[in-house]
Length: 191
Image (cartoon, rainbow, N blue to C red; front, side, top):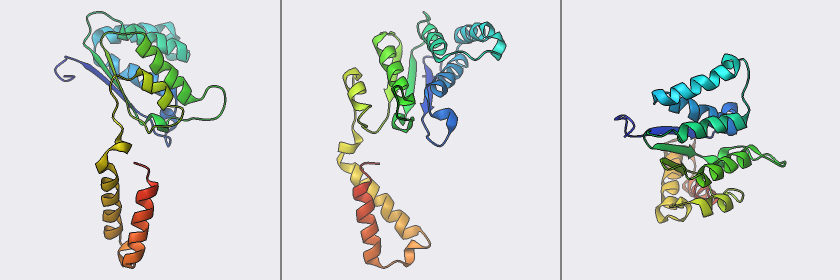
């Protein structure tokens, strides 16, 4: 749909190992950049936004980036926008009043409560204690892989493959291989 111009797609993957993929600003910047590349109208809005911030010399606040994103998403006559936020649980959940993850959850709540007609949001995450209570009431459809019967078998199969193909592990006694497989499968908790 995206390639044929019938939809716009913006994807963001949270990765705790990359600084620019740990917080709300990383998500907003990436999504805005991806969307402006898919529509001349989006590009015009972002170009104006860039100009109002002295052509990049001034750093916009997160609130300004959110307003810009909403302006893009509410632009009439545009194709539906599919926003995918992957691995939200990898977003930093540092202690304090407002963690980066809490800020992203507030944004997602705000976007959903804004009832933007052509916005579709997909969020993937482990069911963390701070994420589940926020997203559950907002979801139209949920899939819990932790509860899928094949999930544990897939994890166990992968662990067995690693143990049997790793040069060092191949030399282990069969009972040690089985012990490692059993413990890792149990403690994987669906991951």
